[in-house]
Length: 182
Picture (tube, rainbow, N blue to C red):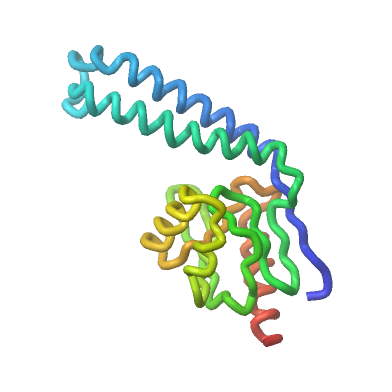
């Protein structure tokens, strides 16, 4: 690789994420406060007020956390993703750990959940990267990724100012070039 590729965070995508999070937090609050009114005239699932309150609380916690993350990223001056001769420096999502070295990467594959595509970065020593987590929540998120996909590392373009297909192509090309250098 001759030059460093820097992909910035997308302020527009972050604003949309914050807006969506606020909507779902408001919906969660509404569900929690109005759980008892669902007992009549609703599906069997929503007749249990405790279940409706649980859904409301889960919505508040999950989307509150994603909203806080997006808000923090809005003021983050660091680049979202850097691809260079050392590897991929990821600062794009809640489970980002910084530099993922080319020498540690064994495979890169694309997965899709609903409409969201992401790259799964498989490494020789996943614990090394889980150990780089700055807090227990991030480590837990990475372990969940490990259990579901076999790797703690994933990259998406959801917060990046870049098209996913182009991102995938660049990372795959650089991976092949840098794996041959070793």
